[in-house]
Length: 141
Image (cartoon, rainbow, N blue to C red; front, side, top):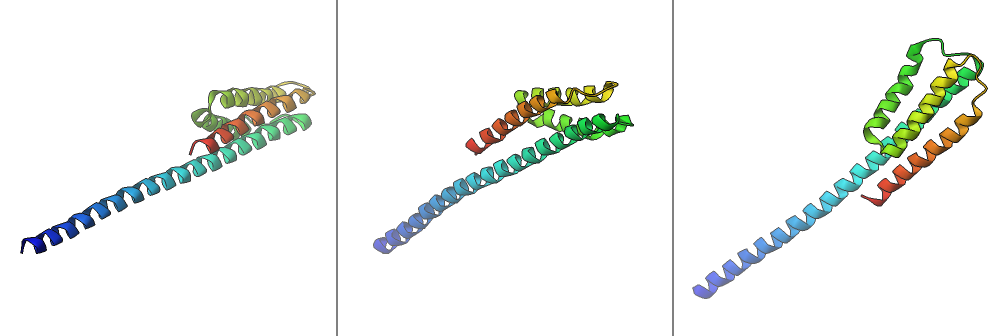
């Protein structure tokens, strides 16, 4: 009888240990999978936000080249994008975005807007900082 009891207890203990190993292995794999999915979503969000901000600031500069923005509400979209960037982006991206937004607003406030050549350099700096931010997210899942 004791040998049968030892066999049953050994089987139960083996099943328990196997179950615990399986649980912790799956938990670790699911946690890693979840962090990778979260990083992928964050990268997609930033790419979309940065590109929308670029489009809006370029639109303001192009409008300024032809005519001035007719209403202050035309700035609300780009202001919203800048607010989102301010919340999630690192300081270097926020500073570049602020410089770019200031240039677009200044272009619309001048009576004659021939100062768009500087906007290209400002846009280039923003793109560079945004790319660095997105690449740094690829490195840290």
